[in-house]
Length: 314
Image 1 (tube, rainbow, N blue to C red):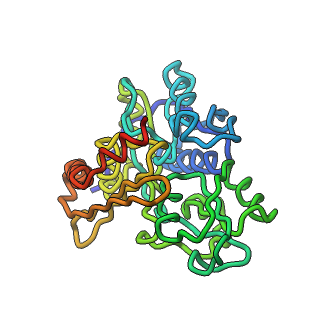
Image 2: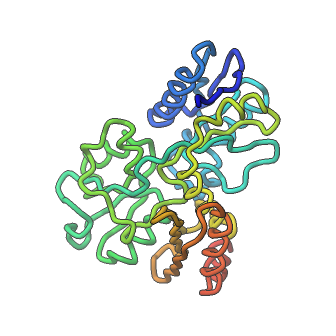
């Protein structure tokens, strides 16, 4: 039986950041919408966000990842755009009132990637090697597992980060594998880092499509783009992070995957220097992902996560 598609609006405008990766993501969704609804005009409104403009300070010091989202939400609010496409790891855990995640796309590789011109893996790096990352989550895990390495901040879009590596500012850098693959830069990946060495960020590799909660027409049009299995994993991760008040200021990772029809969820909370690392792992019902995320958060709390989080927020 063929699925009857909803009648979409005559025109859909996608709000997107203007970085190469963000535009790839917007064009990817644009292509899918055009294929579904050939009669609909689908265009992209490119925007520069505050997060793109401030590049000399780490995200955790300037207000976190919401800086990449806010301007796009204003465009939705004002009716200049109908939907916004985000890397889900950049989307704050609690959606602002009046907005909704209408669809979560199929997840690309969720793992972190080791990128270097001279070394093949983290284990190969000699003592004192400088590793670049913009993420407290990656930094804390690197410091815990590889204390002989020097971790230094690295901001900018993917191309800027690769250029800094190529100029010799770093022996290696850590990036999301998904972003490199989507930009056709998969050959720069020397190794995909095991989730045991670097547990991914909440939502890493997945695209979230945001719209206004009152746009029933847009929500219906986006429904065919929703990927239930990816969404189950991501919703569990986001529930854990939300329960722990996760943000850029907190070294926290959460990763859910489907194994034999069940959700396996791992999470950690750490001090930035990696000296304290709390971990939890639980299995749960694929149909109740947010309950599993909450349980993992509770398990981390039982180990003392609140004390670490309180110290970081002082």
